[in-house]
Image (cartoon, helix red, strand yellow):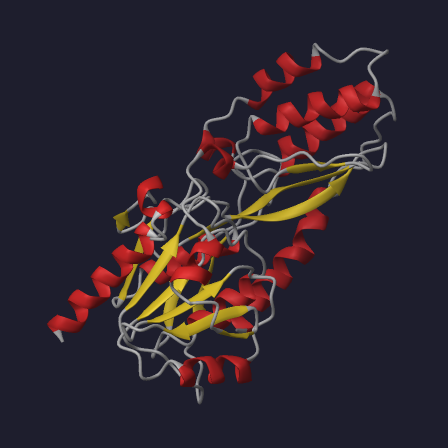
Length: 339
């Protein structure tokens, strides 16, 4: 885990330096705050070219709506709408009265119902450790739900979890509606599914104010959790549009492993490491500043495609059936028969 952690620390240290290359003072009025916001993004946001966003055109269109009599809430809403042009869940304007957001998963089927699984598959009988809900089901497949990558993962807890499901014939890892968290937790968990050093991706940072001014990629690798309990049987990862940010990264790397199948919907995306800056009026803006690629060298800002696309159906849900989980069982059953 030290390799990724050191890269993240180095990037965090570099970002404020690149953000302060020119000490521009903006007036604390509607025009000054708008210009500050637009310029901060113009110089430091990392996906303009990838998303083909004409940021100059966006400025002209939105700045024309700024006027001396505009209220703080009206200015906030206007700036929030401008940021939504980036289609980026990591980009938020933060004030004392609101937080702007772009949540792509609001536009798609939810494809997850925690109560349905708890009641009809786990029978409200499961164990929980390190924020992970787990149990071996009656079909002898293990089920793990990890709903938040901000939940700390302890090595001792993971040893208990994987020892507890060691007799299962396959594993379902459910990360639907996991909105992300810490990349170091991604590394810790994946270390239990690999037996050798693997290439996990690369990270860049902005090294100039141009939209295409980036450093050379910092490659990072994951190591197996040496001396710890591993799980090497067939695995199915369940994802949906709510699988965002660090979870998006987790799905991307897990998909590259030979014994893993990803089932469900396209993930919610979010492959930019976020950074925060401040406007003259005290509002904060959080935005993607460092792009992260997956093991295949691709950006996954718009999500990771599943190996098997499945949506939950209303009919099955009414009958207490999770269509996506059932597909996972089918895949694991076929693996069991093949072996």
